[in-house]
Length: 267
Image (cartoon, rainbow, N blue to C red; front, side, top):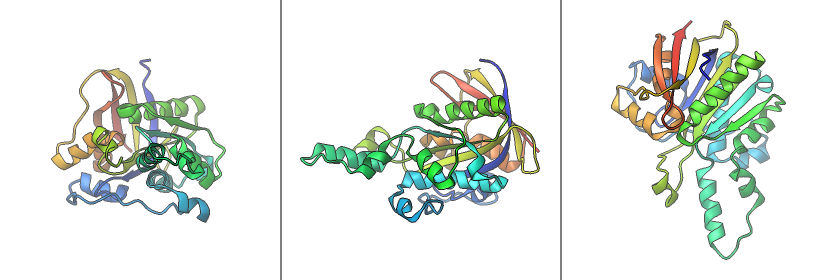
């Protein structure tokens, strides 16, 4: 498919080490503030009822907060938004706990552990929290998850003519799984993509699939390390352009041997 997919970015969410939200991240990307190495700050899942909030894991808190950030910036109604949740894995700590349980004598898995282990857990919690009946898609494509999620979200915007909230996130794994999948922390980003320009629009994004060039990298070493460590942060060069409100062409990682061409034009 060579069709160029286009939408408007109406809201941005971002949580990463040293970058607690999009305004803070924008200040760092613009060079107005230095990046400091600090653990990711994951807000409480205030959207959830108290009983569900207590059971919400780190990855659930991360995904909900990312979606809330982007929707709040656009002033969007959470219950009306179609969503795409993309993650390169699932809940690392929950996966570790399940493996420990199954390796022992007592293999009675708790229902909470089990339902948090599925890849669509974050999307399920989002539905509970927002009471949304809008379409919801869940995608995993390992290190290409952000590109796959972006393509799905843009296709929905083009075909259905409605706004789509893309939430992409990653969670760390404890050892010994960490040695095989060394994600250092929890991190992610969200874009609220709209079919038409509005007063909330920040930029137009056009995506051309089928590229084979090397992905665009960050010039600053610490930020390039974040881009490389987290599949969900591979769009940092595009976020850098959005923070600087500059037109940019960015090559984004996609499936092995392929990339996506992104063009950002600020409003």
